[in-house]
Image (cartoon, one colour):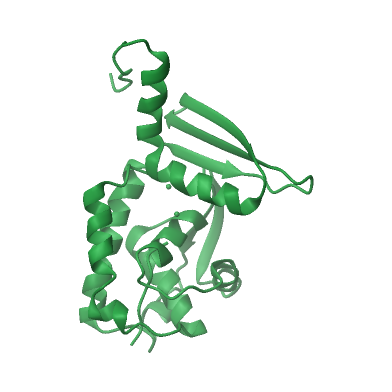
Amino acid sequence: MMSFGLLATGAVVSKNTLGIISEAVTTPLLQLSCKLSAEQSRFSITYAVSRIDAMTPLQLERCLFETGISEPFNLNAGLAGLVEQGLLTQSVSANGLVYKLSDTSDTILNSDSRPGAGCLAEIDALLDSLKAQFEAEKDYIAQYTESSTGVVPVFLSIRDGARILLNVNLIVPDVATARIVTRNWMKNAHQTHQTVWKSIGEGLPFPDWKS
């Protein structure tokens, strides 16, 4: 049996959402998960992209791993292989690299590694939940730059179209820390924005930029 694991751009993850995910990872589907073969890892990436559309590596990471649908595997190698095989396309967006399906991706989506309809129904529910989160998170940006100097700059922002509502630049000691910071920014940026405003706004109402 093949299982997925959901992959890191978004709305704040609510306690209810976390509760749903926590409950989902205890289901028989996930309890019976086995180590993914190369073919199964390619299918899991391709299927997630087919359900959600263009995604950054961080979003894919959330789709594949955070919810426990998939056993861990080398995502970067998987993405590079799929691009090389012409099954995914790679492009650059405001959030960095994004991956989309190519016209030939059906060769993987309809392969023998495709799990049964019952397994996919459970997976689809989790992916649909993340798709809604990614849509709400589209104005959150989190990026970091690897450096040979022993420090890693991290750039975080919330945008409303071309307008920057909040911009935070940090220096962290290593890439592992940068990945944690960027992942949590994508989950909690709106809450962070409200907390920052509360500390500096002296009781003023939170700015509403929707009008």
